[in-house]
Length: 196
Image (cartoon, rainbow, N blue to C red; front, side, top):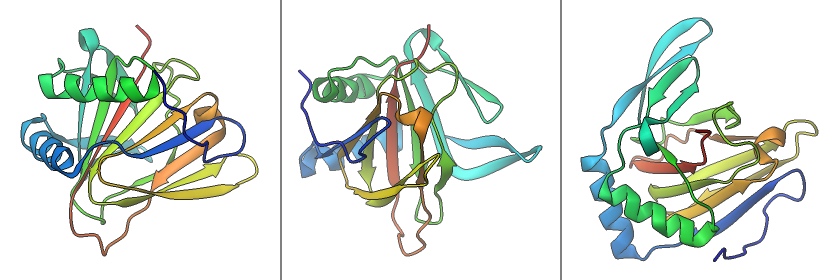
């Protein structure tokens, strides 16, 4: 059953922040297990016509080897691990949505971030739920409306869940700003509903 939390934006989509959904012991366990057992690789992107390799590491897990293309690179989904399936069930219990893919990001410290973007690739089911789960260092998450530039920000806590849905990706950009004073890692999991 979906648990209702206030929408942190006031129009053109939904962004519901659930806060921390796990206890301290669970947060520590999931972080350590994800850090050591996920098949992390450095991200390779095409930017301004050139291929670059980021310090940030990524992994993509999905049903039936679903493919996902962004930044001119295609990823083939790795088979779910028991740990990820366990986490996915927690997320489904909170959002009431079923997910068939998960993109994971490992930020080693505050020198690594993510610029303004929308998760609106053609492989993602339009207006579907994207559930963003964070472990590790608390980080600021910023939102900006594509037309009127209205902005919001929120601190994503260790073990916290943010769900973006409806027309959010069509109308809003989001980013994870760099913050050099943060010297510890963060793992982010974004559960998605992909076209099959």
